[in-house]
Amino acid sequence: MGLTIGVDIGGTKIAAGVVDEDGNILSTFKVPTPDTAEAIVDAIASAVDGARAGHQIVGVGIGAAGYVDRQRATVYFAPNIDWRQEPLKAKVEARVDLPVVVENDANAAAWGEYRFGAGRDNRNVICITLGTGLGGGIIIGDKLRRGHFGVAAEFGHMRMVPDGLLCGCGKQGCWEQYASGRALVRYAKQRASATPGNAELLLSLGDGTPEGIEGKHISTAARQGDRVSVDSYRELARWVGAGLADLASLFDPEAFIIGGGLSDEGELLLEPVRKSYRRWLVGGGWRPVAEVNAATLGGKAGLVGAADLARQPAAPM
Image (tube, rainbow, N blue to C red; front, side, top):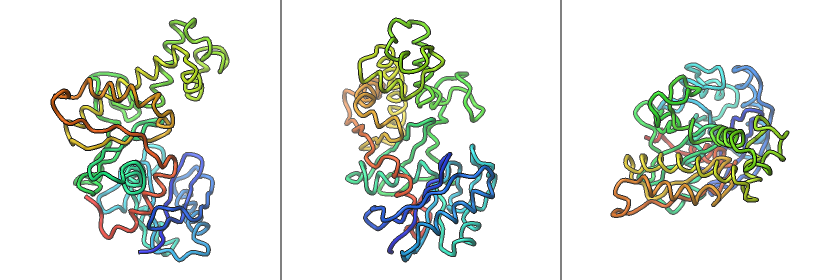
């Protein structure tokens, strides 16, 4: 179908990129993310216009962090933007004069990995995005499965612990409270406070206190063998693996793909995740076991996936 543009809406910037049918990004254009919902629509249009210069574009795909309807047109709800029943497709189409598809950002990233990244040799994959929170996407039989209302794969809000930690969604015990970047920092702070002698390197990378620990400090210290940092990654991996085992019972995929910022740590995270997954997998000693692999597209997965979904003639189910 030709060239399309993918749009990735981030907390600080909105990136638009021209993407060909092989998943190659030919050009990009970025603008700051505004503070208001209506200004974000204008910024999306500005980014698209900047990226399309010199290219013949046939469509636009937008990755939005929120619940998107099955028609890929309306954002039911966005946690970080004041969008409620937002007709984003219609508003952006009116500004850019191109066909527009709106997709959940984690779904878009999952599709990008399936089509052009770590999942390109698989027909049935579950993608998990481990970042500040936890998102995901379901590809079964070469199709992105979005559910009847379009809001499937909100894995981060599966209840893992009854009456557990309060989540930003308002519920308690959600998976992302135990398996996410925020959870990793919490584990490290708790352990450093309890046993500071085991966290000397970790504490030295911040301000010397447990409260000053950041995610980047944990990964740096863990690679150098800091005990608290390594143990914190193992605790994170324990929860990730347990959740994957539950998803295997539901979907029986041939592979799990782990993306998001935490996947950059490679085997530091993946090796203990695989152990935990096998431990919690029902019948694990007697059944085929899905692979657990790192995503390969990095931060461009959502943009590339959104652009490719703009080529789909109808809403994937």
